[in-house]
Amino acid sequence: MKQKALIALVGRPNVGKSTLFNRIVGRRLAVVSEVAGTTRDRLYAESEWGGVAFTLVDTGGIEVTSGWHTEPLSEDSEQFLPLIRRQAAVAIQDADVIIQVVDGRQGITAADREVADILRQSQKPIIVAANKLESTKLWDTAYEFYELALGEVFPVSALHGAGSGDLLDAVVSAMPLAAPSDEANDAVKIAILGRPNAGKSTLLNKLIGAERAIVSPIAGTTRDATDTNLKWHGQTFTLIDTAGIRRRGKIDPGVEKYSVLRAIKALQRADVALLLLDAEEGITAQDTHIAGMLIEESAGVIILVNKWDALVKDTHTMPEYEAKLRHELNFLPYAPLLFISANTGQRVNKILSQALEVNEARHQRVPTAALNKMMREAVTRHPPPSKGGRRVKFFYATQPSVAPPLFVFFVNKPEWVNFSYRRYLENRLREDFPFPGSPIRLVFRARSEDRFGK
Image 1 (cartoon, rainbow, N blue to C red):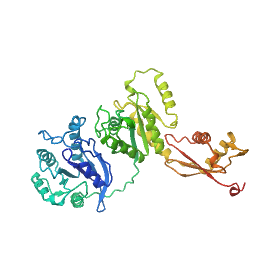
Image 2: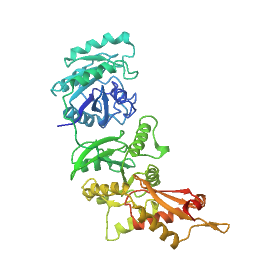
Image 3: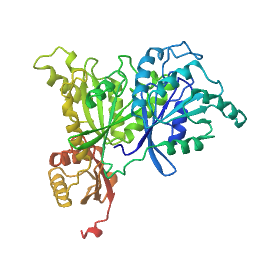
Image 4: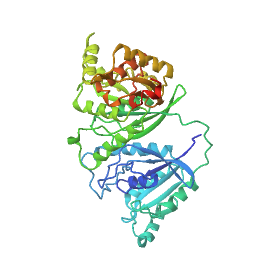
């Protein structure tokens, strides 16, 4: 039995589903645009009302066949309508409660009636949210939507929040009773990052063995960061598919800009990031930029060279490609590297086990005695820098935290520890404790010699 009810927002394009989604979850997660057809993939988020937790899903607008478009679709959205309808259908199938969002100002359209016909077949509790009623003087107009014969109708303004409380009261009342969960939230969060059209959605689908994200050869298809949970060998994973990150100068204003910001936020909550590269295009400046973001956010990293099946190869191709990649991404020497094909599944089965290893490395603790033994040997092998005849003295080292591992070195002159010596100490640490895929942080703090009895 599911531990939390799933609430699906459905309806024709541009009735305000994404705005209502953001209002309910209390933060801006869904891409919002005045252009119909903006939302493409399903977008999930956890929320609660009155102490009752649930999962809310935003969907793309359901396509209908009666030529109902009253607002122009963006040029690149119309081709996605059949896929959007399939995504909404999956959400409807999974949902415990469905909210049909309609445009209260426009009134009932033929499209609303067709959507209602689709929903009526679900045999699920259905609530109608008559949106865009910013003035309470217009709320009486919401009652015409009872003609849809679905369930209660609530006038709301997703933009201002008016009426959302009454709507959520009804949603919570319609939820099925859920069994309490005794399972700890120990999911390993994995973000899939890369340039547009590198194969992120295809990889996500291959990993879970089901069509969860829209897969399309058109760059920039995935606009929202989406979460998918799965279990593998008893371990729970949360897979986060994200919009492809373009060079800043290539980011279109509006919709895609918010998607890029959302991809960054997805990275900030990830334990492990899969950096997906396109084997055919090779390593680009944008790949190195994204890799730099991974370091800034201290996520574990696995480098995946995708579309490996598309290359004509000989016995030298892989080592030569790896050598070039390691040179271009020399600031990520600790990241494991896999050559994969998301399309055929080549080596995809190695990704989750590798992610577990990286996550364990992010939480690894080095015994204090072993850490200080390493420090003394490192300092003896390569003495620290000196200035004016005085040398940096290392007294003690400790590891106060993990995820990522943080090491604090107590020295007499922390400002004298230059970048080269920091890198040397990190390399020595990794010789004894590899921390595969995990960044490590080194901090140097001042302590007097008298404090340590010197």
